Image (tube, rainbow, N blue to C red; front, side):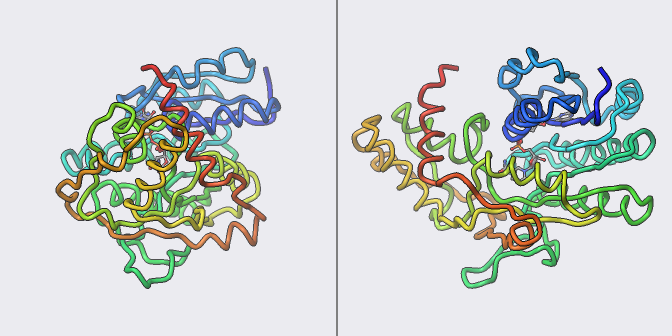
Length: 326
Ligand SMILES: NC(=O)c1ccc[n+]([C@@H]2O[C@H](COP(=O)([O-])OP(=O)(O)OC[C@H]3O[C@@H](n4cnc5c(N)ncnc54)[C@H](O)[C@@H]3O)[C@@H](O)[C@H]2O)c1
């Protein structure tokens, strides 16, 4: 059926994509929402299958590296707008296989930008990371939108490169683009390889909790549903050609985070002595010490606020993994 927009959300069967597409399908019946995903090891189509009951939801299994198929898809579905989340996202994998990260995160994004330039009239919203800015010392100010790009891992380098291409398409071709750089997300649906699911699953299965190095690395944790509300706001109201940082002013060392997760496990009586499972393992090469983002721009210009309480969100996340059977 003809609608106001035909929005493509790539990476829809991954962690953040599955929350974002659920939000868009439910809240925007005036749009057709096209989910696209190659269904890699990191995806889980079960997270979005319930959306088939909505008449404005469509799904395509497609690889963003396949340029011809991407062009065909844009043309056949008259895609007007893109929110691009499809990516290889795990830093450890980028250390063992950087080429895959360049092919997916850089070439894949260029394919989408070119198809968008040829067939679309709306906006290209690129979802990126604060890791493009590199590493902060303990007393450095958080990254803002003017911070220089200094990526340290192959993952961060591939995302930084894709950000540069998106920006260049605005300058060179006048494409309507926007970039958001967000801090570490957490919440239900995240792949088991990531830090918080690893901690939760370790305690759940009474196994050692592996913590890289000395556990003093600091991250600014953002609940995935707050990230979704920020993307919604920036996609609709952000200024073309701009970048917006998204974070939660919620800095914790890995040791503090694990301690809090253990406390919640004990409060819920899911485990008696989870802190005894902590085990420090060899550090990740090039492991950034601290990330923190200054998100005053999105707060001031677009009136965005985090709505979810951190401890409650973490508790809900633990419940999701605890009750998950597969
Ligand atoms: N999770 C975080 O903390 C975080 C933080 C900052 C930025 N980001 C960015 O947000 C986006 C989503 O992250 P996530 O955590 O949901 O990742 P994820 O790994 O859970 O999901 C990525 C999805 O992209 C799909 N995908 C991978 N290669 C593809 C290809 N060639 N063609 C089509 N689809 C492909 C995967 O199948 C998967 O479903 C990524 O671009 C990531 O860089 C994530």
